Length: 349
Ligand code: 1HN
Image (tube, protein in one colour):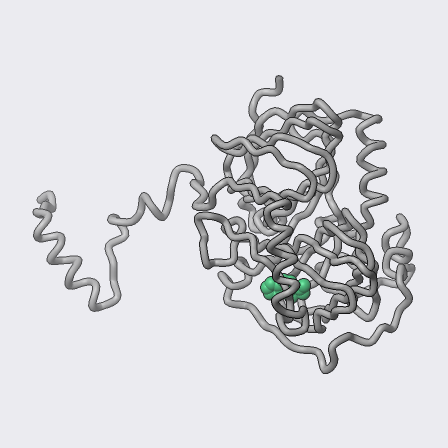
């Protein structure tokens, strides 16, 4: 057998003849295609709410919610400028709705979640039902469900939006449609979904409401917080996860949404978690308290309403300086379904 051999010039000449045929040599790119472990392109980052808020309020004086359709300041990862991404797969933004405004009804295949940050009197409507959005509430807009927001109070209302937009655009599976009115018709009283699906009970007849998404579209903070505080007193915090509970779909016990996982981590004052990492990049918003987040080689102090990002496969740990409640979301559920999700836990101290 003769061993093939070539000079760099010969290879270059060969590659130059491949390109016009839309062909390429795998061996030149294999290492990049298949790293030994993930190396996220996203950067660890923290947005201070105190920096965002004045700009958000300024946007409230520049244009109406109707004009904007959604008045949002997008949280762009420093490594993804202009790409509307907080992590590699998750969109995040801070939305503002002023008293008397309506963010008109529409629907799209990307799913959305909200974590309420500020103000009283805002509502969101989904599936013919309204829910009042209170601070710390976790609110869901299922894929392809009409949704509109309004503010009937006297405060500016602001929340964190999370969408699976980068995932959906990767699949090139995005559709969007406007409703025939600014607000959708309301066919159910407020609280109906929570009563039917969120009371530890379920309707006798099988229900098909939003496909793979939970039929509960507001998980009130009051309940979430009480559960976390009680769990902290019971078994106590886990070395890595402190006290973490996930928002679940009562129909099948799985995650609340098919493409985005959401959970809340409670750290009692003084508690410090041991480092861990997972393949999902995580968007985090501090609902209550104060903590220091170590993310990769960065360290960020978070106060209430600050948002931070942990890129995928990046070590993270937290130390609470006050009783803290950290809302988190990521693409974990999608990775789990595809058999890709992994985590690694560092030694507990
Ligand atoms: C959207 O529909 C909302 O409904 C918020 O509040 C942010 C970002 C991109 C595309 C659709 C909302 C959005 C969005």
